[in-house]
Image 1: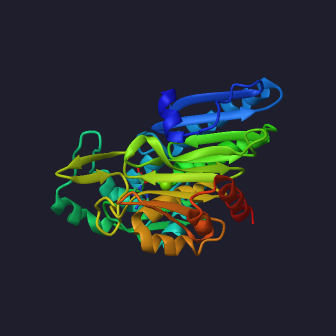
Image 2: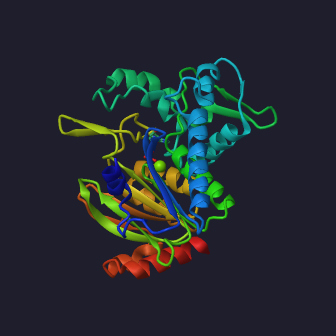
Image 3: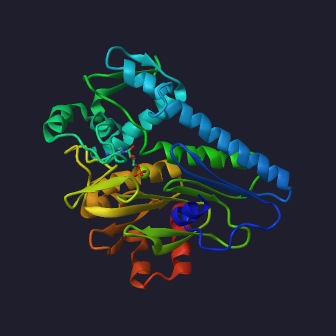
Amino acid sequence: MLIRILITLLVLSSPVTQAGWYEVDTTLMGTDVHVSAWHKHDQQAQKAVESALTEMRRINALMSTYESSSELSLLNREASQQATVVSDELLQLINRSLEISKSTHGAFDVTYASIGYLYDYRAGTKPEDKRIQAQLPAVNYEHVVIDEQANTVAYSHPGVRVDLGGIAKGYAVDRSIEIIKQHGIENAIVTAGGDTRVLGKKLDRPWVVGIQNPRSEKDVVAVIPLVNESISTSGDYERYFDDEGIRYHHIIDPQTGDSAREVRSVSILGKESTYADALSTSLFVLGLDSGMQLINTIHGYEAILVDQEGRLHYSRGLQQFAEQDQQHDALAGKVSQLVNQ
Ligand code: AMP
Ligand code: MG
């Protein structure tokens, strides 16, 4: 487990074993979670980390589609028949998802799940083409109708399902950092799967996070020092199976109902983990040209893409550093500057 975490997270500097640090590695929200925090009183660090984990469990119980009792599962059972009252929190995250759908021209679409649920990556099974075609009309974020006054969500088309897997982990990471801050902590890191946010530095130095080589678990393709930032990576190696040389993985192009295949991974750097998470999924669907075009219009967010040949591509704000063959410290400074503007 610890090894997995280190590989996923690739925190390349020494482990946090000094006094004052408290850290936990666990599995939550169906993924590897790592939380660590520093406080001069060890017990305060422990309290902060435990509260962050409690928050993640709460969010999972609310938003997981694997939990039949979650509010989102209930919504998926009812919203095609009638407008269904939901909590403010779920309503707001769905609302945010719909806004991101609009700004990504539908690349990010939580109704992808109307088809997504037909894939079983563990069993290695996929829906037949005619099933995909039959369900495709249900994939459209415009079918999700929100009434903010009544606090309701309705699906205006049969067969619509919503899944927040492309944004909820980032949201849980943001909430966890918020709670850690409320405990008076100034140095912490929270990771859930491909989503990481750091608070402050790792004491006197930046946190250092590696971007995994999509085709070799133990290698990194870039090393990113982070201070008060988030990084979110979406990759085609996280949940997938190969069939006749074609990779079927968990990021679905809403236009085709098939896995998006233009790139191997997308990492987004920026302040907020919720947004970075949704943007990494979005750029993965958009691919290199459209993805870069989009990220270059978003203030404070930058991208590093790995294409199908394994080549790295940097968004505009990181370009000059890419050309300098990744001067890591300079890159860190620039990233900090960009996201803190
Ligand atoms: P990530 O690993 O953050 O890129 O998120 C991948 C997850 O996002 C998948 O496991 C799905 O739950 C969800 N997802 C897949 N395709 C899409 C899409 N086109 N729009 C929004 N969410 C998606
Ligand atoms: Mg994502």
